[in-house]
Every structure is written in structure tokens, then in C-alpha cells.
Amino acid sequence: MKKLFYFGIIFCLILVWSCTTPKSVTTTDKNESALAASANDTIRIANDELEYEIIIIDPGFNSWLIGRAKPRGFYDQKYLEARNIQWVTQWNTHVVSQRPGGENLFTMMIDYNATTDYGYEVNYMLYNYLVYFQLKNNIRLGGFAPRP
Image 1: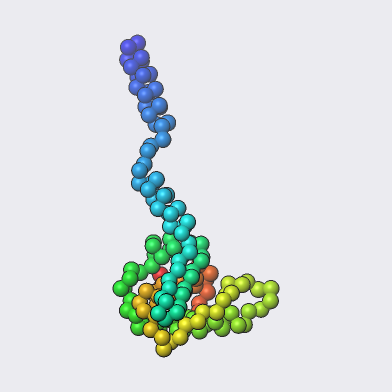
Image 2: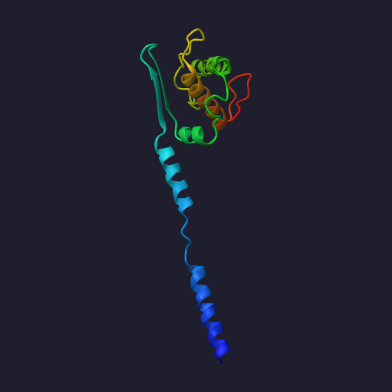
């Protein structure tokens, strides 16, 4: 009888212990960082000397940039400029040739001059946005396939 009593107590303790939710600090931290990244989806890059400004407003881009983009310095500026020139040219072609009633993915022209040195940061951000845009919308903007 005592064995059955002890077995019942152990069974009840195991049952109570298995029903409690585990507390995980890492899950909470990941959720908070994901929320912070998605909340800040407007990125602005500006240089008053050259009078240029890039404003990227796209939900999910900032978190994609943090999680999937190659780190700064992975590509050199010449590589980024070569991709940006071709992709921006195709982007602007899509803006001009939009059909009424179609998807308006290309709403604004990108004024990118191949002879202007915009610096590494602008080229890096523009390159990564164009990669993100192509992957997100399953579109190719030119001869180069986007590399995440």
C-alpha cells in the first residue's frame, strides 16, 4: 500500500512539473530583437556635400539587412557600383514602362549617376535593398542574379 501511495505522489509531481511552461530567456530576447528590427523599417542615408539622400521604407528590409545581408566590407565599392548601375537602369525602365492596372512595385525613379562617387555606405545600402527587393518579389532586374 505504501508503494502505491509513493507511486501516486511521484506521478502527481511529474504531472504538475510537465504541465508548467518553461521560462526561456533566449526566446524572449530573440522576439524583442526581431520586434525592434521590424519596428525600424525606415532607413535614411544622406550626404549634404553631394546633395543626395536615400530613404528606404520597406517593411522587413531592416531585419533582412541585419540577418541575411553580407557584412560591410565583403564586397568592394567597384563591385557594388557595377551591380547598382545595371539594376538601377532596369528599375528605372520598369518605372517608365508601367502598365495601368498592374502591380505598382516600381513607383519612383532612382537617380543614380555612374560618374558620382556616392561612397561605400550608399552603394552598400542600395545594393542590399535591390537584392532584398528582387528576392522578396521574385524579380530579376538585370544580368546579375541577386546573392543574399
